Length: 354
Image (cartoon, rainbow, N blue to C red; front, side):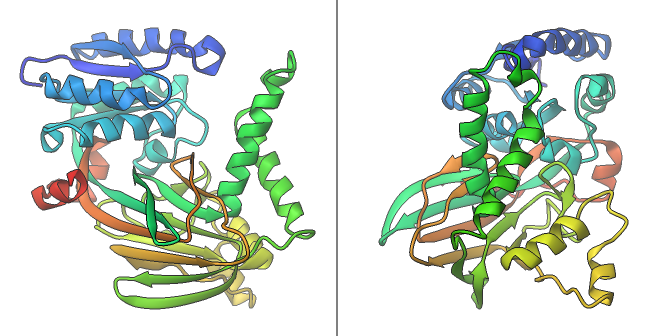
């Protein structure tokens, strides 16, 4: 840490104020593990990115996020937006809803896992993580640029996210209901609502995907997911062969309601029936496409919703994604390092930073 304490970034008002207690516990565990640190509160409306960037440019070399995948993304963007990203290691204390990032790297989530996850940070084993650089175009004009670390999607999932956000806002206005109808339950309800609507209104679209120069045509697309880490939605592994440090993402098409059902059943982590079992029964699911450079061209009467890492994005008719191999350095359990390389490519960092 070069004489500088680590910085713990979290939102003390999250989880209806419970996060403040979790932060106190995490800080006590870090002290017990002899990890010098200081606490910095996250900022609303994306302000955390600038806070983290400034801390790193001032000398910080270890940043620890505590929260959900959204907090992970903001802290990671702050790291990559600094002038010293290749020298920074990022620790993880996942306490959110899905926690795709932490789970993908072998970390359990929630306050009960803080002691173990702090021990992982104290051990200091670092692995590289790929990063997606996204550009959205509409009618030939670039309208948005972003980075993502877990997943990007267009279609049903992103539309469900929009519905979830609206529902969560409405539920929060009803005293007592927010304590019951929350987190994954709200998202599951939104997915079911959008899925039911697909029987009444045609929400499918056509997609042309150019992956590393090869053209793939998909008709009747309900959703398309471009995935980096293994876990999706907290409980699904859409592609068991996915690796977060191989310089390639996985494009997973959801071709209609039947394909949706196959993937929801066959890729659920605790499901007794896998995709191979379904295939033997004659239920083939659309296979993922792997690559380092993607161009997705959407065709349809309306532009489907888009999201990355659980945040709503402006919808476009063309999406470009470049993968920067191992551009982010994460502190993970030792076994994760033994299963992967640890080098961070300077060229990859320049690609993201540019």
